[in-house]
Image 1: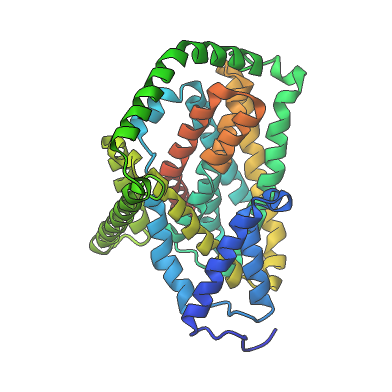
Image 2 (image 1 turned 45 degrees about the vertical axis):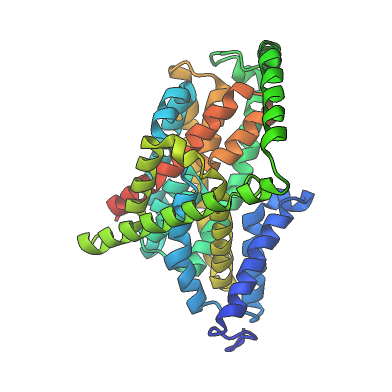
Length: 409
Protein backbone atom coordinates (compact mmCIF):
# COMPACT_ATOMS: atom_id res chain seq x y z
CA UNK A 1 0.00 0.00 0.00
CA UNK A 2 1.37 3.39 -0.98
CA UNK A 3 1.69 6.41 1.32
CA UNK A 4 0.17 8.69 -1.32
CA UNK A 5 -2.73 8.30 -3.70
CA UNK A 6 -3.16 9.23 -7.34
CA UNK A 7 -5.97 11.63 -6.42
CA UNK A 8 -5.18 13.86 -3.47
CA UNK A 9 -7.54 14.10 -0.51
CA UNK A 10 -7.89 17.83 -1.13
CA UNK A 11 -9.02 17.38 -4.73
CA UNK A 12 -12.60 17.76 -3.59
CA UNK A 13 -14.39 17.96 -6.94
CA UNK A 14 -12.62 14.97 -8.44
CA UNK A 15 -13.36 12.84 -5.40
CA UNK A 16 -16.99 13.96 -5.31
CA UNK A 17 -17.33 13.15 -9.01
CA UNK A 18 -15.93 9.64 -8.45
CA UNK A 19 -18.25 9.03 -5.52
CA UNK A 20 -21.25 10.04 -7.62
CA UNK A 21 -20.05 7.90 -10.51
CA UNK A 22 -19.66 4.91 -8.18
CA UNK A 23 -23.20 5.46 -6.86
CA UNK A 24 -24.62 5.70 -10.35
CA UNK A 25 -22.67 2.66 -11.50
CA UNK A 26 -24.21 0.64 -8.68
CA UNK A 27 -27.73 1.64 -9.70
CA UNK A 28 -26.99 0.83 -13.34
CA UNK A 29 -25.50 -2.55 -12.43
CA UNK A 30 -28.63 -3.47 -10.49
CA UNK A 31 -30.52 -3.50 -13.78
CA UNK A 32 -28.28 -6.25 -15.11
CA UNK A 33 -28.60 -9.92 -14.23
CA UNK A 34 -25.31 -10.10 -12.34
CA UNK A 35 -25.78 -6.72 -10.66
CA UNK A 36 -29.26 -7.60 -9.44
CA UNK A 37 -27.79 -10.56 -7.58
CA UNK A 38 -25.16 -8.39 -5.92
CA UNK A 39 -27.34 -5.26 -5.36
CA UNK A 40 -26.50 -1.62 -6.08
CA UNK A 41 -25.03 -1.18 -2.60
CA UNK A 42 -22.49 -3.98 -3.01
CA UNK A 43 -21.42 -2.82 -6.47
CA UNK A 44 -21.00 0.80 -5.34
CA UNK A 45 -19.02 -0.20 -2.24
CA UNK A 46 -16.94 -2.60 -4.28
CA UNK A 47 -15.96 0.00 -6.88
CA UNK A 48 -14.89 2.52 -4.23
CA UNK A 49 -13.16 -0.21 -2.20
CA UNK A 50 -11.02 -1.25 -5.17
CA UNK A 51 -10.11 2.34 -6.04
CA UNK A 52 -9.11 3.04 -2.44
CA UNK A 53 -7.04 -0.08 -1.93
CA UNK A 54 -5.24 0.43 -5.25
CA UNK A 55 -4.28 3.91 -3.98
CA UNK A 56 -6.26 5.70 -6.67
CA UNK A 57 -8.33 7.60 -4.09
CA UNK A 58 -7.59 8.22 -0.39
CA UNK A 59 -9.24 6.36 2.47
CA UNK A 60 -9.97 9.65 4.27
CA UNK A 61 -10.87 13.03 2.82
CA UNK A 62 -12.92 16.13 3.68
CA UNK A 63 -15.49 15.16 1.04
CA UNK A 64 -16.17 11.94 2.97
CA UNK A 65 -16.80 13.97 6.12
CA UNK A 66 -19.26 16.18 4.23
CA UNK A 67 -21.16 13.06 3.17
CA UNK A 68 -21.40 11.87 6.78
CA UNK A 69 -22.29 15.29 8.18
CA UNK A 70 -24.76 16.57 5.60
CA UNK A 71 -25.82 14.12 2.89
CA UNK A 72 -26.77 11.21 5.16
CA UNK A 73 -29.02 13.29 7.46
CA UNK A 74 -30.59 14.98 4.41
CA UNK A 75 -31.44 11.60 2.90
CA UNK A 76 -33.34 10.35 5.96
CA UNK A 77 -36.43 12.61 5.70
CA UNK A 78 -36.52 12.14 1.92
CA UNK A 79 -37.02 8.40 2.48
CA UNK A 80 -39.74 8.76 5.12
CA UNK A 81 -42.50 10.75 3.42
CA UNK A 82 -44.67 7.59 3.47
CA UNK A 83 -44.28 7.01 7.23
CA UNK A 84 -47.94 7.59 8.13
CA UNK A 85 -48.27 5.68 11.39
CA UNK A 86 -52.07 5.82 11.43
CA UNK A 87 -52.34 4.14 8.03
CA UNK A 88 -49.73 1.55 8.96
CA UNK A 89 -51.54 0.52 12.14
CA UNK A 90 -54.94 0.52 10.41
CA UNK A 91 -54.07 -1.42 7.24
CA UNK A 92 -51.12 -3.71 8.01
CA UNK A 93 -53.24 -6.14 10.07
CA UNK A 94 -51.79 -9.50 11.09
CA UNK A 95 -48.58 -8.77 9.17
CA UNK A 96 -47.94 -5.89 11.56
CA UNK A 97 -48.24 -8.30 14.51
CA UNK A 98 -45.75 -10.62 12.83
CA UNK A 99 -43.47 -7.65 12.14
CA UNK A 100 -43.47 -6.75 15.83
CA UNK A 101 -42.70 -10.34 16.81
CA UNK A 102 -39.80 -10.34 14.36
CA UNK A 103 -38.46 -7.16 15.93
CA UNK A 104 -38.53 -8.76 19.38
CA UNK A 105 -36.72 -11.80 17.98
CA UNK A 106 -34.04 -9.53 16.55
CA UNK A 107 -33.52 -7.84 19.91
CA UNK A 108 -33.22 -11.19 21.71
CA UNK A 109 -30.74 -12.36 19.09
CA UNK A 110 -28.72 -9.16 19.42
CA UNK A 111 -28.40 -9.48 23.19
CA UNK A 112 -27.37 -13.14 22.87
CA UNK A 113 -24.83 -12.38 20.12
CA UNK A 114 -23.39 -9.49 22.15
CA UNK A 115 -22.69 -11.81 25.09
CA UNK A 116 -21.35 -14.86 23.23
CA UNK A 117 -19.46 -13.35 20.28
CA UNK A 118 -16.33 -11.34 21.25
CA UNK A 119 -16.56 -8.05 19.32
CA UNK A 120 -14.09 -5.80 21.16
CA UNK A 121 -14.47 -2.18 22.23
CA UNK A 122 -16.98 -1.34 19.51
CA UNK A 123 -19.29 -4.23 20.42
CA UNK A 124 -22.07 -2.03 21.80
CA UNK A 125 -22.07 0.19 18.71
CA UNK A 126 -22.11 -2.77 16.34
CA UNK A 127 -24.89 -4.40 18.37
CA UNK A 128 -27.00 -1.27 18.04
CA UNK A 129 -26.35 -1.06 14.31
CA UNK A 130 -27.18 -4.71 13.65
CA UNK A 131 -30.28 -4.51 15.86
CA UNK A 132 -31.50 -1.51 13.87
CA UNK A 133 -30.85 -3.01 10.44
CA UNK A 134 -32.55 -6.31 11.40
CA UNK A 135 -35.59 -4.54 12.80
CA UNK A 136 -36.07 -2.07 9.96
CA UNK A 137 -33.60 -2.42 7.09
CA UNK A 138 -30.44 -0.90 5.63
CA UNK A 139 -31.57 2.71 6.01
CA UNK A 140 -31.39 2.24 9.78
CA UNK A 141 -27.87 0.76 9.51
CA UNK A 142 -26.63 4.11 8.26
CA UNK A 143 -28.67 6.29 10.61
CA UNK A 144 -27.81 4.24 13.70
CA UNK A 145 -24.11 4.22 12.85
CA UNK A 146 -24.26 8.00 12.91
CA UNK A 147 -26.36 8.07 16.09
CA UNK A 148 -23.95 5.84 18.05
CA UNK A 149 -20.90 7.64 16.69
CA UNK A 150 -19.28 4.77 14.77
CA UNK A 151 -17.56 6.27 11.71
CA UNK A 152 -14.72 3.78 11.26
CA UNK A 153 -14.73 3.00 7.55
CA UNK A 154 -13.04 -0.34 8.12
CA UNK A 155 -15.58 -1.60 10.65
CA UNK A 156 -18.56 -0.25 8.76
CA UNK A 157 -17.39 -1.75 5.47
CA UNK A 158 -16.78 -5.12 7.13
CA UNK A 159 -20.14 -4.92 8.89
CA UNK A 160 -21.93 -4.07 5.69
CA UNK A 161 -20.17 -6.90 3.87
CA UNK A 162 -21.25 -9.33 6.60
CA UNK A 163 -24.77 -7.93 6.55
CA UNK A 164 -25.10 -8.24 2.76
CA UNK A 165 -23.79 -11.81 2.67
CA UNK A 166 -25.95 -13.02 5.56
CA UNK A 167 -28.99 -11.18 4.18
CA UNK A 168 -28.59 -12.88 0.80
CA UNK A 169 -28.45 -16.28 2.49
CA UNK A 170 -31.33 -15.42 4.81
CA UNK A 171 -33.59 -14.25 1.99
CA UNK A 172 -33.04 -17.55 0.21
CA UNK A 173 -34.07 -19.39 3.39
CA UNK A 174 -37.27 -17.47 4.06
CA UNK A 175 -38.23 -17.50 0.38
CA UNK A 176 -37.99 -21.29 0.43
CA UNK A 177 -39.89 -21.84 3.70
CA UNK A 178 -43.45 -21.60 2.28
CA UNK A 179 -42.50 -24.28 -0.24
CA UNK A 180 -42.24 -26.88 2.50
CA UNK A 181 -45.75 -28.32 2.72
CA UNK A 182 -45.09 -30.05 6.03
CA UNK A 183 -44.18 -26.69 7.55
CA UNK A 184 -46.96 -24.62 6.03
CA UNK A 185 -49.71 -27.02 7.07
CA UNK A 186 -48.74 -26.38 10.72
CA UNK A 187 -49.77 -22.74 10.43
CA UNK A 188 -53.13 -21.02 9.97
CA UNK A 189 -54.12 -20.62 6.33
CA UNK A 190 -55.66 -17.20 5.57
CA UNK A 191 -56.01 -17.89 1.84
CA UNK A 192 -53.02 -16.09 0.38
CA UNK A 193 -52.82 -18.68 -2.40
CA UNK A 194 -52.13 -16.92 -5.73
CA UNK A 195 -55.24 -18.44 -7.32
CA UNK A 196 -57.44 -16.86 -4.66
CA UNK A 197 -55.80 -13.48 -5.13
CA UNK A 198 -56.22 -13.69 -8.89
CA UNK A 199 -59.94 -14.44 -8.48
CA UNK A 200 -60.34 -11.46 -6.17
CA UNK A 201 -58.48 -9.21 -8.60
CA UNK A 202 -60.65 -10.35 -11.51
CA UNK A 203 -63.79 -9.59 -9.53
CA UNK A 204 -62.49 -6.14 -8.64
CA UNK A 205 -61.50 -5.44 -12.24
CA UNK A 206 -64.95 -6.36 -13.52
CA UNK A 207 -66.60 -4.16 -10.91
CA UNK A 208 -64.43 -1.18 -11.81
CA UNK A 209 -64.46 -1.46 -15.61
CA UNK A 210 -67.40 0.86 -16.23
CA UNK A 211 -66.33 3.60 -13.83
CA UNK A 212 -62.73 3.50 -15.07
CA UNK A 213 -63.83 3.88 -18.68
CA UNK A 214 -66.00 6.84 -17.76
CA UNK A 215 -63.16 8.43 -15.80
CA UNK A 216 -60.77 8.00 -18.74
CA UNK A 217 -63.25 9.58 -21.14
CA UNK A 218 -63.68 12.56 -18.86
CA UNK A 219 -59.92 12.94 -18.39
CA UNK A 220 -59.27 12.82 -22.14
CA UNK A 221 -61.94 15.43 -22.75
CA UNK A 222 -60.47 17.77 -20.13
CA UNK A 223 -56.93 17.26 -21.45
CA UNK A 224 -57.96 18.03 -25.04
CA UNK A 225 -59.77 21.17 -23.94
CA UNK A 226 -57.19 22.57 -21.55
CA UNK A 227 -53.70 21.30 -22.47
CA UNK A 228 -51.27 23.50 -24.37
CA UNK A 229 -48.16 22.17 -26.19
CA UNK A 230 -45.38 21.44 -23.74
CA UNK A 231 -47.62 21.87 -20.71
CA UNK A 232 -46.68 18.46 -19.31
CA UNK A 233 -43.06 19.46 -19.01
CA UNK A 234 -43.83 22.92 -17.66
CA UNK A 235 -46.32 21.71 -15.09
CA UNK A 236 -43.90 19.14 -13.74
CA UNK A 237 -45.94 16.00 -14.43
CA UNK A 238 -42.89 14.32 -15.91
CA UNK A 239 -40.35 16.06 -13.71
CA UNK A 240 -41.97 17.41 -10.51
CA UNK A 241 -39.49 20.21 -9.89
CA UNK A 242 -41.74 22.05 -7.47
CA UNK A 243 -42.31 18.91 -5.37
CA UNK A 244 -38.60 18.15 -5.50
CA UNK A 245 -37.74 21.65 -4.30
CA UNK A 246 -40.29 21.47 -1.51
CA UNK A 247 -39.03 18.05 -0.43
CA UNK A 248 -35.41 19.22 -0.27
CA UNK A 249 -36.39 22.40 1.56
CA UNK A 250 -38.44 20.46 4.10
CA UNK A 251 -35.72 17.84 4.63
CA UNK A 252 -33.02 20.46 5.10
CA UNK A 253 -35.22 22.42 7.51
CA UNK A 254 -35.98 19.33 9.61
CA UNK A 255 -32.27 18.48 9.74
CA UNK A 256 -31.47 22.04 10.82
CA UNK A 257 -34.07 21.82 13.59
CA UNK A 258 -32.99 18.33 14.65
CA UNK A 259 -29.30 19.16 14.93
CA UNK A 260 -30.06 22.47 16.63
CA UNK A 261 -31.90 20.48 19.30
CA UNK A 262 -28.88 18.18 19.56
CA UNK A 263 -26.70 21.18 20.35
CA UNK A 264 -29.22 22.58 22.83
CA UNK A 265 -29.77 19.29 24.68
CA UNK A 266 -26.14 18.15 24.48
CA UNK A 267 -27.28 14.60 23.57
CA UNK A 268 -24.57 13.20 21.30
CA UNK A 269 -25.92 11.59 18.16
CA UNK A 270 -29.50 12.72 18.79
CA UNK A 271 -29.75 15.01 15.78
CA UNK A 272 -30.72 12.23 13.41
CA UNK A 273 -33.26 10.93 15.96
CA UNK A 274 -34.93 14.32 16.33
CA UNK A 275 -35.05 14.67 12.54
CA UNK A 276 -36.72 11.26 12.24
CA UNK A 277 -39.31 12.14 14.87
CA UNK A 278 -40.22 15.31 13.01
CA UNK A 279 -40.64 13.71 9.59
CA UNK A 280 -42.68 10.79 10.96
CA UNK A 281 -44.92 13.22 12.84
CA UNK A 282 -45.48 15.29 9.69
CA UNK A 283 -46.15 12.20 7.58
CA UNK A 284 -48.73 11.05 10.12
CA UNK A 285 -50.44 14.42 10.64
CA UNK A 286 -50.36 15.60 7.02
CA UNK A 287 -50.32 12.43 4.89
CA UNK A 288 -51.97 13.92 1.79
CA UNK A 289 -49.51 16.79 1.59
CA UNK A 290 -46.42 14.62 2.07
CA UNK A 291 -47.63 11.98 -0.39
CA UNK A 292 -47.11 14.61 -3.09
CA UNK A 293 -43.42 14.69 -2.18
CA UNK A 294 -42.85 10.93 -2.36
CA UNK A 295 -41.13 11.07 -5.81
CA UNK A 296 -38.27 12.92 -4.11
CA UNK A 297 -37.36 9.73 -2.24
CA UNK A 298 -35.34 8.81 -5.34
CA UNK A 299 -32.98 11.64 -4.42
CA UNK A 300 -32.65 10.14 -0.96
CA UNK A 301 -31.82 6.76 -2.47
CA UNK A 302 -29.04 8.29 -4.55
CA UNK A 303 -27.63 10.23 -1.60
CA UNK A 304 -27.39 6.92 0.25
CA UNK A 305 -25.50 5.47 -2.72
CA UNK A 306 -22.90 8.22 -2.31
CA UNK A 307 -22.61 7.28 1.34
CA UNK A 308 -22.04 3.61 0.45
CA UNK A 309 -19.26 4.73 -1.90
CA UNK A 310 -17.66 6.58 1.02
CA UNK A 311 -17.85 3.45 3.16
CA UNK A 312 -16.12 1.43 0.46
CA UNK A 313 -13.44 4.06 -0.02
CA UNK A 314 -12.76 4.25 3.73
CA UNK A 315 -12.16 0.50 4.14
CA UNK A 316 -8.77 -1.13 4.48
CA UNK A 317 -8.65 -4.60 2.94
CA UNK A 318 -6.49 -6.12 5.68
CA UNK A 319 -8.78 -4.95 8.48
CA UNK A 320 -11.92 -6.01 6.60
CA UNK A 321 -10.52 -9.52 6.16
CA UNK A 322 -9.46 -9.66 9.79
CA UNK A 323 -12.72 -8.56 11.43
CA UNK A 324 -15.14 -9.83 8.77
CA UNK A 325 -15.47 -13.47 9.90
CA UNK A 326 -16.45 -12.59 13.46
CA UNK A 327 -19.08 -10.18 12.10
CA UNK A 328 -20.54 -12.96 9.95
CA UNK A 329 -20.94 -15.05 13.10
CA UNK A 330 -22.48 -12.12 14.96
CA UNK A 331 -25.05 -11.57 12.21
CA UNK A 332 -25.77 -15.31 11.92
CA UNK A 333 -26.63 -15.59 15.62
CA UNK A 334 -29.04 -12.65 15.43
CA UNK A 335 -30.78 -13.96 12.31
CA UNK A 336 -31.10 -17.49 13.68
CA UNK A 337 -32.73 -16.33 16.93
CA UNK A 338 -34.97 -13.93 15.01
CA UNK A 339 -36.30 -16.66 12.71
CA UNK A 340 -36.74 -19.27 15.45
CA UNK A 341 -38.60 -16.84 17.72
CA UNK A 342 -40.78 -15.63 14.85
CA UNK A 343 -41.80 -19.13 13.77
CA UNK A 344 -42.60 -20.31 17.30
CA UNK A 345 -44.50 -17.16 18.33
CA UNK A 346 -46.31 -17.07 14.99
CA UNK A 347 -47.48 -20.62 15.50
CA UNK A 348 -48.78 -19.83 18.98
CA UNK A 349 -50.61 -16.71 17.76
CA UNK A 350 -52.14 -18.56 14.78
CA UNK A 351 -50.48 -16.43 12.11
CA UNK A 352 -50.14 -17.50 8.49
CA UNK A 353 -46.64 -18.56 7.39
CA UNK A 354 -46.91 -16.11 4.48
CA UNK A 355 -47.46 -13.25 6.94
CA UNK A 356 -44.47 -14.37 8.97
CA UNK A 357 -41.98 -14.54 6.13
CA UNK A 358 -43.16 -11.23 4.62
CA UNK A 359 -42.86 -9.57 8.04
CA UNK A 360 -39.39 -11.02 8.48
CA UNK A 361 -38.39 -9.71 5.07
CA UNK A 362 -39.70 -6.27 6.05
CA UNK A 363 -37.61 -6.46 9.24
CA UNK A 364 -34.46 -7.30 7.33
CA UNK A 365 -34.72 -5.50 4.03
CA UNK A 366 -37.37 -2.81 4.41
CA UNK A 367 -40.42 -2.17 2.22
CA UNK A 368 -38.79 -2.76 -1.17
CA UNK A 369 -37.59 -6.32 -0.66
CA UNK A 370 -40.71 -7.29 1.30
CA UNK A 371 -43.05 -6.04 -1.43
CA UNK A 372 -40.89 -7.73 -4.08
CA UNK A 373 -41.13 -11.05 -2.25
CA UNK A 374 -44.91 -10.76 -1.84
CA UNK A 375 -45.22 -10.06 -5.55
CA UNK A 376 -42.90 -12.88 -6.58
CA UNK A 377 -44.80 -15.35 -4.40
CA UNK A 378 -48.16 -14.24 -5.78
CA UNK A 379 -49.39 -12.99 -2.39
CA UNK A 380 -50.92 -9.82 -3.79
CA UNK A 381 -52.92 -8.98 -0.67
CA UNK A 382 -49.66 -8.85 1.27
CA UNK A 383 -47.93 -6.29 -0.94
CA UNK A 384 -49.44 -3.25 0.81
CA UNK A 385 -48.87 -4.66 4.34
CA UNK A 386 -45.28 -5.42 3.30
CA UNK A 387 -44.72 -1.82 2.25
CA UNK A 388 -46.42 -0.43 5.36
CA UNK A 389 -44.49 -2.65 7.77
CA UNK A 390 -41.21 -1.92 6.02
CA UNK A 391 -41.91 1.80 6.23
CA UNK A 392 -42.65 1.46 9.94
CA UNK A 393 -39.28 -0.25 10.31
CA UNK A 394 -37.57 2.64 8.56
CA UNK A 395 -39.32 5.07 10.90
CA UNK A 396 -38.66 3.27 14.19
CA UNK A 397 -35.63 0.99 14.03
CA UNK A 398 -33.02 3.74 14.42
CA UNK A 399 -34.47 4.58 17.83
CA UNK A 400 -34.58 0.92 18.80
CA UNK A 401 -31.04 0.17 17.65
CA UNK A 402 -29.62 3.28 19.31
CA UNK A 403 -31.37 2.44 22.59
CA UNK A 404 -30.10 -1.15 22.51
CA UNK A 405 -26.56 -0.02 21.78
CA UNK A 406 -26.38 2.45 24.67
CA UNK A 407 -28.09 -0.04 27.01
CA UNK A 408 -25.51 -2.72 26.20
CA UNK A 409 -22.73 -0.15 26.63
